[in-house]
Amino acid sequence: MPPCNATVPIVDADEVSSSSSASISSAAVAPKTLTEEMKLKNAAAASSEFQQRPYPWNYLSDTTWTLMGSIFLLTIFFPGISMITLSTASGYGLYYALYKYNAPCRFVLESIRSLQRFVFYQIGRCILLDTRDSSYLPWMSYGLFCVPVLFYYALNRHMTHGFEVTTFLLYHLCRLGPRYRFFAHHECLIHIEGHASKDGLYCNPWTLLTTGKRVPLPKWIRRSFTDHLNSALVGPFYGSIPNSYGAAHNKIHHRWHNDTGDVHSNMDVDRTLGISSFVLWLPRFIAYWTGLSPVLLFWKRKETALLRMMCNGMMYYYGLSALVWYCTGSLFFWAYWFYPHVEAIAFLGGIAYMWHSFSEESDPSNQYVNSMTILRGHDNIWNEDYHVVHHHETFVHWSEMPDSFHRNKEHYVKCRATVFADCEQGLFFAWMFGKKWDEMTDFFVDMQYVFSNGDKNSDRLMNVREVVAEERMLRAADNDEKVEADMKAYHTEVKEMLLKRLSYHYMGNRQEEWSEYEKRLNAGLKEYNEKES
Image (cartoon, rainbow, N blue to C red):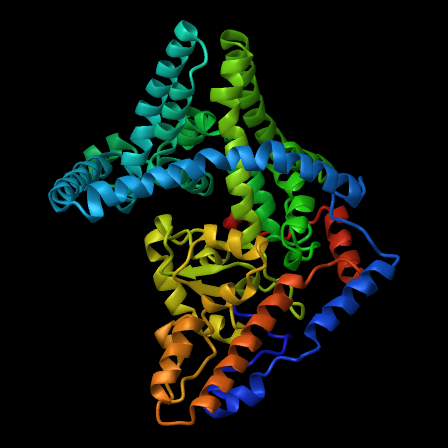
């Protein structure tokens, strides 16, 4: 994993460890003028002649995008998130009723889970390239076999009885699963499937049977069928377009890592402004998820193979959508087929905005800062919360991501990486849109912090709230007022640092950086390393 940018001044961990807890308060007191500094920067940006958005968002004014974003917020985001919210509430109800407070039922469920793991592991030994991926199979089976049956049931009810609210709710809640588990695992699966395009996920069963060796399926079989099992056969029921991850995600997002070449970059908006910046940004993710902006960028860069790949996926999805509309009518189409597309835009748009909300002004391309890591996350499916590892070492197997994090911990420490703990993506929505910066700070893991007894937080990985509680215990013999003052100053310093990273953006007088990006984009340079696709 590459280290931080060596040309950028960083705080060395040894320098941090040489200072005592008492000196932290004096060194870490945040400048009182940070808010004024941010206002001055915004004023400079407003007065600057250089006010250009990334391609293709530079073709319309901010006012137009904000108006469109406001309409999308009301017609797409809020409706799209509603069933996921209901799924979350019902999921917790089932969890408390059937698992947490129900010992006999919990025993039965755990027994079924153990049997399921054993059965699918045996199946995985026969068909998977890597048997560690056997946990994919139960989720894939639900999508491949159960969801189409649910869809047929809903269609049959609709054709017989017309639109029924109960059928609508039943279908979507069963499709999403308790606390949207089926939806979340499917989205992770098509993400994994897109990144596994080099060798695929499945082995050649004949070679395995005759030689005992696991080798990939022939390329023509993978490209025509097995590479798209989830995205093409299950994806439409969840509103996703085949080839989107293989083309747009791999060759745009992982090429530019949320920088201004990324068609759904948020690096040119001030993320501290709460929902107003999200409204301005929302049309970008809609254009990305529908395939429009990736097609435009591939066309602009004359990348015909990627353009064709993206167009093939779009023709498949939108052609299938037109067929469903023609055969079932408008009401069924909008309620059962198109709604999942809206749902995916709403939920995954929020996730995409959150994952890359932070940026270091002195080193904007530093992935340890502008990609987020969540430790002990409440919603960590196949270690997707190790997002820095995912961007730096795309082909690291999901089961090895925690090891990669610990193996490269020194880089996280030097960069004071954006690491949080004991939280989940949904909480970030509340913190960022509600501007609850103190609560957000409580969950930050400061890997440069050194406790008053000499322990390093890079070893203990405590969040700020836990650090403060630990320091109060360690310094119990000290003056209480001094301890509280030090901890308050430390909390303020961390909060101001996070706000500075959230407020950084390319707009204003950063013309030199922007011009350098424009040169690379217009030249069509493919500096992106193909093995990271």
